Image (tube, rainbow, N blue to C red; front, side):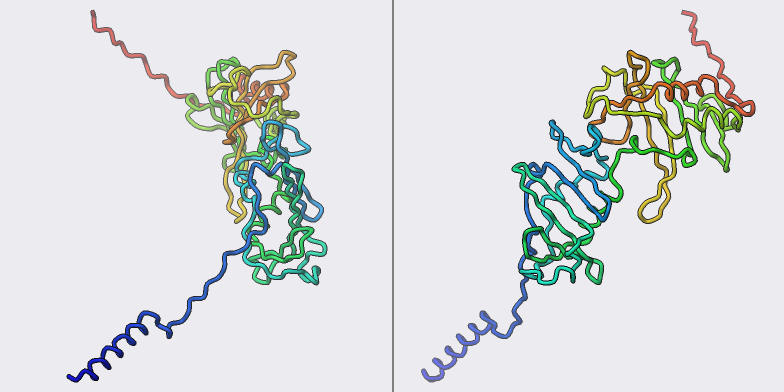
Length: 350
């Protein structure tokens, strides 16, 4: 092979290698920049959260110990079931994208008179007012704007829906919400030795469309209630305590108030409906403690799964009336009892 041919082959080989390495024919990958932040703050900076949706509004503030509570309900904290993660969510949503650097026609996006406004107040008294306008045609996003700034953003509708629900359905604890007696389907009473009982469990429950009762571990089955007595003595109690107030917030040791793990319990149940329309049992358990010195109330706590429960004051009239049902049950028919098991001798003769 001639020198000229050898040099030509070397040049061709180098050219092929460059083409393979550079590959000018491949399609360039389209890269999208990260979605911009609407705003960014830290959880510790946030001191006040207010949500207004149309004519409904709610406001949450941190107390002196750093716990969140309703502004107009001192000592009443939002239920953790719905409040958990809320403050983190408000440290700043990541938007889908920045639509415009300047909004020229706010009415086009529902931002001239936004239905939902979220106010976040920080430690240094700075305020961030988030305005949520109309939803996009696919319902996946809100048009959003921060008051005082011209930019128009797309905010995920899930973020807006959760915040809107704060105003339309405030996350009140179960004990605070008043109940209609017609909605209650069960009342159970467990009276411990602290209140003259022996940890027995007496249950009143709607079965097959009528109220029945059973003392578990003693009655073999449920029987009908005395309807006249139940209507007069039991039904009025199903609305819950006539008064209940927060005596002390965020308590971890309840023993000074006579409340222990196996304290007397009053359990009320009703039917709940999820956002998807699914029915489920919902309820509240009061653990009853000592009576107040003036005899007008009982210390109590609930079992709602909160990290730090408040000590409540329940009116003594309601608690005593519930306990009286246990002491003098309104049986409508004679219950059948379990036959006691005879004691067996273990005497070995030694």
